[in-house]
Image (cartoon, rainbow, N blue to C red; front, top):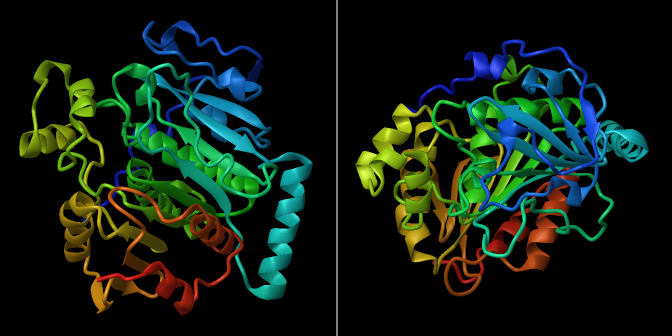
Length: 364
């Protein structure tokens, strides 16, 4: 049985860490507690105004979230950077109005796009790393994009799965921040990502499902749309830099030993140990052998999906896994297909049987 998500610890509910109002900063310089190592180049101001907070409690007390980068401190860790566009203000108000009309007149629940990153090229690049900013036709469409704080900690880490460092409760803090964003926007989230970003989208969708613990009923209507995600971090061939950064005194540890350390560190590192999100569309490229054999199929078996056709697995009407043919190796579906699906899911439209069939192109 999947274990219960630990959203009730102090880091999630939040012990008050200061009542200062959020202040706007126009520079990308972090304070001494959040300063990146000299080998890491990080400039959040490149994405617009930077709004800094004294704690996660401070952030969730903020009733209006303006466009820009919102920087939330994580005790014992580099800070969390979240890019927001169109959540509050006139654009946000327009989308909230159309969302309410769509729900009332058409019975559809529109969602706010929220993106997580896959592995990043670190050489000659500058963080934060925000994905999904240009995935839609209109660059003014509201979006939430989360940068992985572990990438500030270590310049050798290309992928951190948004777990945070041991003992920092980073996943709980991110979930709490996302629940507040959904509440301010008056819309649930469409959590998207491929590879490691897909892993994160599933984790946070499962966490947001529990409205009693997140304090946000609207966030509990969120949906995860992912492609080629890892299911187990320790079973992924490219996870060693991450594991070494997490446990520098046990460098080189692998497999079951690494999984044990991650469990002891209090991070969600295996999707088979948590509930399946209530609304999940999981797409897997069939020629991506490692992800089919070590991730997708073990997830299908452990979480009780049933095979209903070649390349199509269902756990319920709203929990679907599709294996399709999109090319050679660890690649996503074509961009036009992703954009079309994101548009449908974002506007609350039903993903038809025909669309599912198109995703199963030559599936076997």
